Length: 353
Image (cartoon, rainbow, N blue to C red; front, side, top):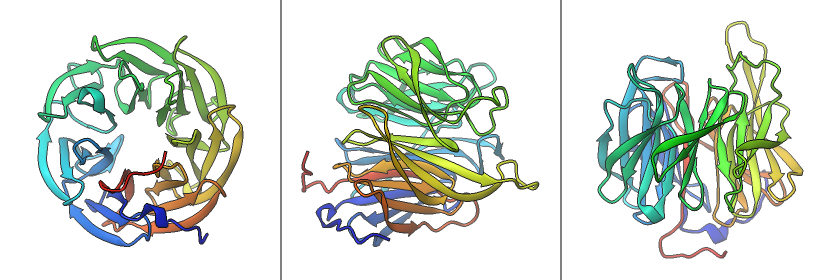
């Protein structure tokens, strides 16, 4: 492991979900010391930090299990005070269920939560007022299971990835309607560029059988034409995608070997692959834990954090040198383990631009 100093991150905190815990663990970003562990509803999935109110939002998608392999969908969002590390409120979205992806428009006080289809409606996105913490409505996305969701920097457009549908749903957030579909073979994680002109989408979905010929990688969507204009190739299937403040595109690759007892195979160490957002050059890669599922980064863009659900670990990676700094272990009761991540800057220590 690298000896890279992280002293400038003193006071910052990394929050990590353990799906089977079910917990949120809080680590000191400078030293990796475990600060606190909060027990929450089963089964937590994704985390999002609201810097205006210093709240964490956490989705609970299923009673146990994961997409297409669970024993029932849940309907709750848990709101957590990021500084006291205590639950503020549990919001029930019923009859909406299977909440997963989270996206924030802080300027308009809007939170967007992807939800799975019901008997009388397709999958969609629930809109929540972050001031009142109450739902304002929902936007249909035309697919059974929208999983991840992202919002353009101007807050006008949303993008939902769909594991089993052959398209990314594009929605007009002002009018509350889906406006178009961009052909992508079973999409996973996504990230929107800082200027809003591109969306980076991972695919195909590991279980997507309709397009077995689709090569793994990141599809680059031009938002002006709503079309795929480039593909950033990866060696293995990519799931999480993240864009740093310094213009690096991060993709988490899942690697496996054949296993007759598992549809996903025997898990091998995953890979964090890094591209330049400017010219789409591949900058390199570094080995991480088993089955990377979520990625975030420090505000200065120097360090990446990769949660790996099967090993229940979080790899801390120096993006300047593409070396591993440390590996955090997140307690779990059973499979699966580490999933959602949120970076929480210290409220009194501004970070350099």
